[in-house]
Image: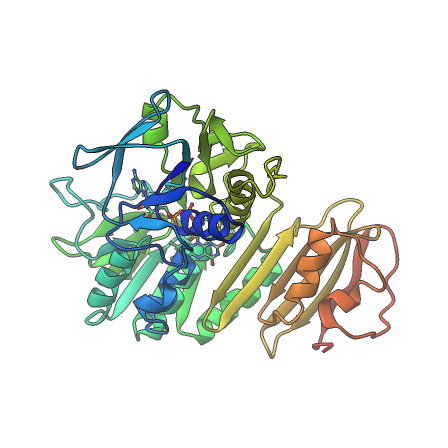
Length: 417
Ligand SMILES: Cc1cc2nc3c(=O)[nH]c(=O)nc-3n(C[C@H](O)[C@H](O)[C@H](O)COP(=O)(O)OP(=O)(O)OC[C@H]3O[C@@H](n4cnc5c(N)ncnc54)[C@H](O)[C@@H]3O)c2cc1C
């Protein structure tokens, strides 16, 4: 059997490695547009900060063959062929689309060069190692950077630039940092940690224009305030790369539509950032790998009936000095109980959200010692045995936890480890 994987990123590599490890037969080929073999994209900011070498973030592929620098430009699902940029055609029996996502360019004046070709000098996105290398080169002479967007990527990029000695500011349109994963209190702790690392944040602010000709000199906010800078990083989210699938006649909404078998059409599958399953397009590494695992079980024959159960919100950031993990529903609401531990001195924040004796959400920020226990409870459909505080501390401190709605053990100060 010939399995062609379009894209050689994180989902593709995971699929290839698992397929091989499960004893899958046949030839797996990864066609990648980037000039290098798959690597761990989550660690890009760490490479930028100089904490990892490029080589050390390579991902294992098992026996699969990677073909870097091979962009796929057309698919024919009926004939089961694909065409490469050099005009050659390849045949396949099963196709896996793992084309990832592109950075979203926000509606900010002056982002592009006057001739419309590419971004203005000093304006960057951060999606590939090549992006990171260009940014690192310019960061050497830079004094001030503005990161537009305060989600996972914006926070990682800002942290990396600060580590390189560049004074960095984050402009974030949302009400607080990383509002997709954190609550307002966790975001406030994160903001303090960033400040200590040399990064200032302006949530609730929109960038309106980038000034400078030919090179960026300042970012203008919607309130008229100007932030002088010589570097701008755009971190405003991603959009699934679906053009190839769309042109091939596959169903596309935000992402390539797949069912529980991760099938977009007979013998055509999609996983990772490019795929949309039950309306979800998480754009995160964990669901990309979960999908890759399910598809590897199916196509290797280890479990031909494997189904992807759907994404349950789960996010993790690990970047020098800033770590968090968030699971499920982290906002409070009717019928939910909340247990919260805050340690302002250590810059840690922990929160459990429970419905009765079931865990529905959690945040760990700054101290991830309990992350495995929480992940386990969450994976076990939230069933909590014993006192929920154990999940945060691993100890048996007797904090009274009532039942019903409300904030329980509210905003305790002090770490209970
Ligand atoms: C700097 C940074 C930090 C991040 N941090 C986190 C984090 O802390 N936590 C987290 O969960 N997620 C994080 N992410 C997101 C995570 O990296 C993605 O969710 C993950 O990479 C998705 O894997 P993927 O294989 O779907 O896409 P990708 O890894 O993007 O791989 C897609 C590949 O397909 C290639 N491709 C596209 N079209 C074609 C074509 N036509 N022909 C050939 N090749 C093609 C692309 O060039 C690319 O190499 C981060 C992302 C970035 C950029």
